[in-house]
Image 1 (tube, rainbow, N blue to C red):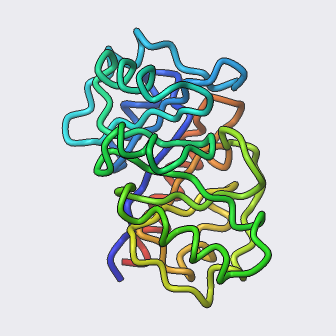
Image 2 (image 1 turned 30 degrees about the vertical axis):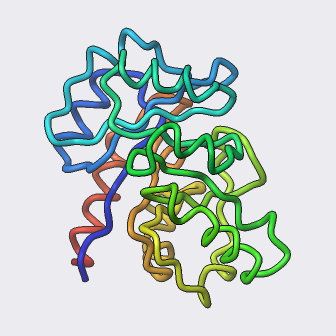
Length: 208
């Protein structure tokens, strides 16, 4: 099987950025949310040069204009939207640059989730399906995979929610386009664990 895209979110240290790039990560996430323990300094994010690796900003409360300004300042390629932003907001950012977050556990049925995803398909380049009900992520909670087993999602999508070495194999069973790692590969909020990251990439290489 082809390896899904790998995104590591909550980056706060250059040594973690370098390790992720060396391991072969596809996307790096930087959180712009003051209440998050992983809140990133814009000057740090602007200084990060990742080559072919996509830089993603994670946003919760900002206006679309504020997001665009931060993206330009920090050299971000995409905006991951965690605030339930509407389709007009997504259009303003640019559909090809939007990763919009949905929380499957908040839906009464798989069909209701699919209908919401279809409504946003034209304004999002990717979806991200996360555990819990709202917020910037990184809670460590795992998503209920049962709701994803019997639905077909046309738009490329990432799976998030407490992913790490212990559950990455189960996550692959629902065939996501990408996997989003954060708290499950940390030793503390914002501090990535090299051993956990290496183990994740070892498992993924084993399954190709």
